Length: 359
Image (tube, rainbow, N blue to C red; front, side, top):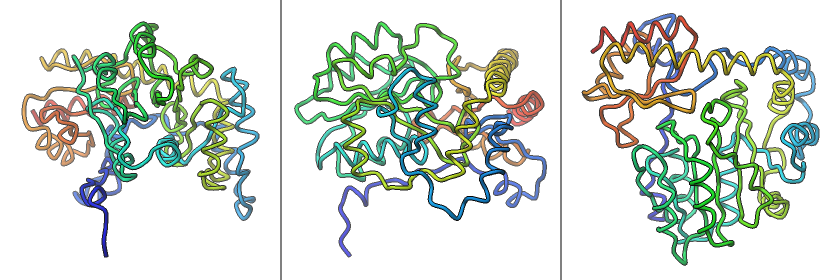
């Protein structure tokens, strides 16, 4: 069987270890997972109730157009419903963009390090990832613009960037857009936008009707606590939606994901409590890490990086033995860093205690 070389060169994405896997391996219980940037409060109570009511309908196919969810989201965001595409997580929107608009050997510019799936999806389609190093841990928009060639088809801007949690400013983003040829698609991945505290952060939705092609990606996995349901969306020009709908599977977002997301949008109390919990958790962790004399990068997301000054993979394994899951950053090129997301107060304290013991 012949397989294209660009497929053989792919390195599969390695997700964070699950609590079940950890406890099965080490014979532990009451473990804490702070590795995958999940919502520490769980899902919205309103989403849970809506999902329970919808269970009787799971013998039916879902609404392939996501009509009710699209209408509600458009009202909330102040856009047209015909400018929205839903996917099985926002990562499916990345795949749909690549499948629809990328041809073999086209180039896609992206920050490095950033979300690992950009490179995987692009390479799997026969495209060429062009990785531009961060500058002072921030996406280097100036350098990305300088890497544009006649083969450039798409540019990814992860803002806040994963794994660094840093943002670009509105001023820098607009200067960047001015340099981008009109035929290039700029994809602004805002998976963590709800957690941003810095008001200089640009919002991709403001550029959907500009003279440049700007696509904004968002998700229900983080602030809305629905990671297990896999639902996200892209906001873009209507003509792009029309083209993507020709490629998109007809029932790519399931019944429970749609009703859960719709209910989560109406649970403002839960949303605000999530943001308070995350921000309070980050501030507590920053203070404790300061006391330990370790360096870290303040974040605009719900996670941040800590330099443990030794092999992060060893620290990761030793933390596992104490029932705490974090993420080593070796795959991102930061061999002495771990990434940790803010959890519940008791989870944050457990992490700090375990880290002190391990170090």
